[in-house]
Image 1 (tube, rainbow, N blue to C red):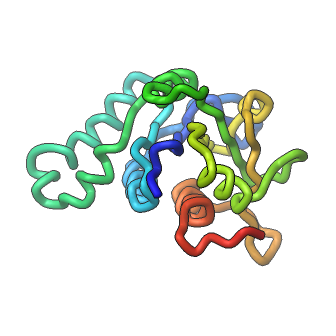
Image 2: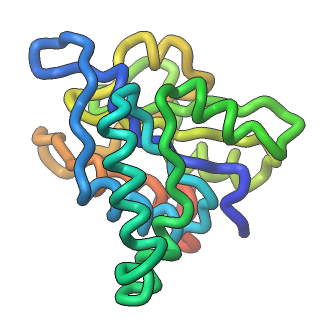
Length: 192
């Protein structure tokens, strides 16, 4: 099983802040490292970091660059391999266009969040769709207080949120990414 038809994007804009205002959220070193490692573990070839901020894009490239060449690459080859799949783009559209190269079918955008939305499908259903298709899919993960409503409206597929055993539901994006990738690409995935 290859990850060529699935890519993941960590979206820093457009997302909401706690006041439900559209903002550009800050890049975090941990998200970049951990999501790259999860993406690589589950066979993905590309992990996009999406931010319109030139300063933040340069920082993301600098973080990846540290582990891709020179001292960092020699110190931790596993991290180099994971960060080699990182692509930094100024917009979701740019990420879609970049991922589109190499595919004849159009990229379908998949979104998720912490709230339940009508018409959403389970992670297991998406995993089955992904496994049985050569269609390319770009999975968007929101930072801050989540992707904007416009992202959900424009998406081709909306995934049901990850839920725990209680009412509390506020996972870090890197934890959510790891759980989702395991459920849609993991070897022991069960359809439920």
